Structures are given as structure tokens and as C-alpha cells.
Image (cartoon, rainbow, N blue to C red; front, side, top):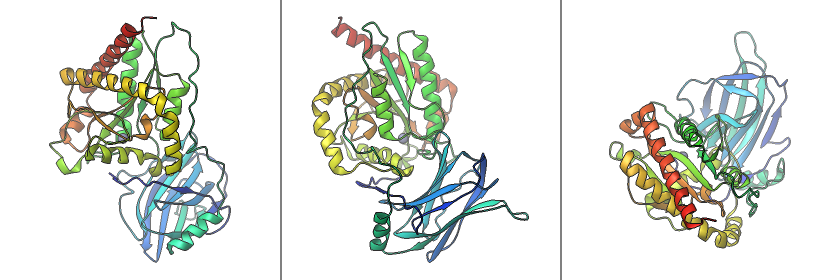
Length: 406
Ligand SMILES: [Zn+2]
């Protein structure tokens, strides 16, 4: 979908100026029914039709250029397939839950810009209430100066290196498995040509797998998200650490437009600083872009480096265990499921960076491939493959117990 990950993003909020405008209204549940982009490169207007007036907070972000519109409790009932048309300064937009009770629209902009106007109109005559955001082009210097003028809404904890301690658990406690359905809410992930989204497919799979694992009576299982809400990558990692996870499995579905019919089946990934190959690197960049897509700040390069030094020691043992688990999944899927490659692949996936939790990322299949799409949405396929993954988790923990009987 998007192959470049920016190293640095800037999130700054201006109270009242050209980069951040508040439009006040009563806050009640509101439905967003449609949206469109009008105008040209000199002035581009984004319009969303709403069932009634709502408070919005509109602000700019850089690297990549985006406009963020936040509003409480808006439910989206937009027509399928909107948000992909390029017009004027706008290259795409997406919408969804950003956090429980917090809706977000993210508008991608092709270059430096100013938010000239942002307001919500009362419904009038036969017109619904409307959110209107007007963008005008500017130069990079002015854009950055405006961002600098603005102050962050709240101090961000993103980018700080930390190694949370896992909660102490009784020795006979069941191992904790954390399943992480990728994307969600404002970030749909990739999608098939018929509009099946990655965020739906992976949530359904994760729920099925959770049920199967719980049925064994051997594990405590948690989902990082159990609804259509966005969750930042770091939030997923921290969730696993706070739960004292013995295993973390991030579940995704891939898209490979260059080989629509050829690319098929599951692929298993672990974390490494050096990507195993160019495709793995591109995939990690795409998956890591999730936060940027949803309009949150990314940690800067220097913070990442610091974190890497701190976690290196803890990570080596965790890394070995991750590979053992990844091999176990490959083994089970090779015999019972559909595997893209038996080769373990690795790259710098942010979501696998818990220093103390063995972590693996599973791409279930390719939504770009119509056959895979059928499989990914079939209950029989899901059942069989969830069985295989559950089996691989059994194999992993059986080995761990055999090695450390006390
Ligand atoms: Zn994904």
C-alpha cells in the first residue's frame, strides 16, 4: 500500500491559528454519512456530511503532510470505497475510531500547506450539517514555522525508551498469550479489490484462535484489540508487557500487487535490525507506517537507537525464543495450512520490539490474491489455520517446559 516509512514525524497542535482551528458545538452522537473533496491545488476543500453539528479539533502534521480531524463519538457510515480519489492538494483520506469514544479523519496532503479554514456548519434547508476544511498551499519554511509555533496538546510519551517490568506471576500460573490483530479503526490496513479490509480479517482470525487456545485450558489469552479501534504499535507492545505475556503474535494480511495470482499463503516474520530481504524490508516499512496513517507521532531516530542499546541484552534471549516459535508456526502451517514460504523472514517491525516477550508476526495470506481472499474470509479455512497456529503454540510451550522443568 505505502512503501516508505518516515523517520520523523511532527505532531504539534496550534490553539487558534492557521494550522489548528476549533469548531465548537454540542457533543452528541453524530453520524458521518459522506465525504468529498472539491477545488484545485490553489484551494482544496474537504467536506464531510454529518447528521448534526459536532465539536472538532483540526490540526496539521508534517512528514508526511497530513490534516487530522478529531471529534468525540462520531460513527462513520460512509459509502464504500471513498477516500482514494486524488484532488487538489489531497491525495487520500481515511476515517475511523482512533481510541474508544474518539473518532478521527486523516487527510493526506501532497505538500506543505496551511489550514485556511475549518468549521462545522449547522444543517440548513435540505443540507445536512457539514464539516469543512479548506487547505491552501504554502512553502516548506512557512509550514514548519507554523508547526513550531503550535504547542503539543499534551506531552507525548512516544519515543521514550522503557523496559516495563512484567508483573510477577505465581509459578504455576498459566502462560499468557497475547494475540494482536493488526490495524483497526482509522487504519484499515490493506484491502482486497472487493473491499475486504485487513483489519476485519485479522480480528476474526484472532478471535477464533483465542477461543481455540482457551478451550485447551492451558493458556490465559488476551487480544490487544477486540473491536474496530485503532491502537498504536507501541501500545500493542506495552499491552503484551503489562500482561506478562509469554508469547506475542501479531496477525496481519499482506498485499502484493505485482504478483496478484502468484503471491499466496502465509509468511512468518521475526524482528531483526537487518531485513532478511528487500520484500521483508518493504513489508516492515508498510506495517510500521500504521501509526503515521492514523496520525500519531513516530519516535525519532535517536530515541530508537537509545532504546535499541538498552534492550539489546534482554532481547537476545527473547530473539532466540521468537525464532523457535516462528519455526514452530512454519512447521504446523506447512503441514496443515497454506504457506507462502517456509523461509523465516525478518525485518525491523516496530510491533515485535518488546525486549522481554518472544514475538512473531504472521501474515495470514495475500488480500491482493482473489484465491487467498476467498480463503481468508472462509470459516473452514480460518478454522483449519487457527488449529495449526494453536498447535504451534502448544509445541512452543511444550519445548519450553521440557527445557526448564522447574
Ligand atoms: Zn498489516
